[in-house]
Image (cartoon, rainbow, N blue to C red; front, side):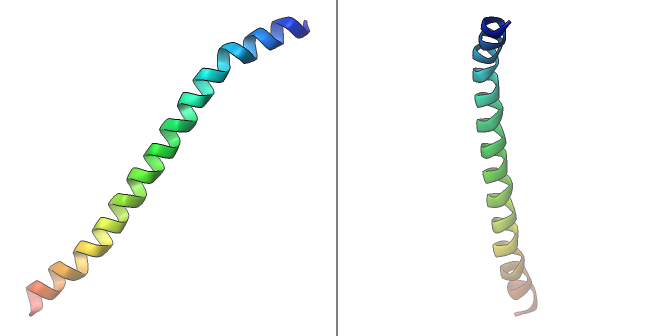
Length: 50
């Protein structure tokens, strides 16, 4: 029983690692996009009004 669980865990570990990496990358991309929008919006407003 224990070896079977160990084998399953070893098989699933790369999948979990890939999922974790994808989630981290997606979070970073979202943060960068939000920061870019927050930085661009005031610039556009400034150029539009001034």
